[in-house]
Image (cartoon, rainbow, N blue to C red; front, side):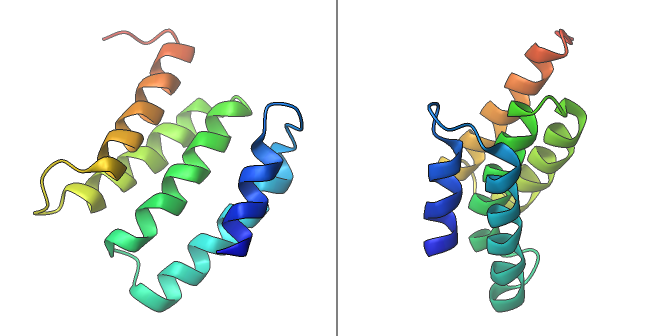
Length: 102
């Protein structure tokens, strides 16, 4: 989707316009929820993108909450998949940044 692509471009390490990226990723998430439903696997990539941005801007608690939501949706009877791994990685990065190792 074009909004995802624009969001990823804003995330590039040379650009780092995370607030702009966040707006695009929220719009992608809204559209995915509207089309597929809030609990559909199709919404997980947008949740992972949003969680990544919150981690980048230092809102680690929000990253963890969103990552947990992505994990719940992605693992609901599906087992391990790519999006689950991304969500766990986002969650782990946020805990590391909080220095929460328990």
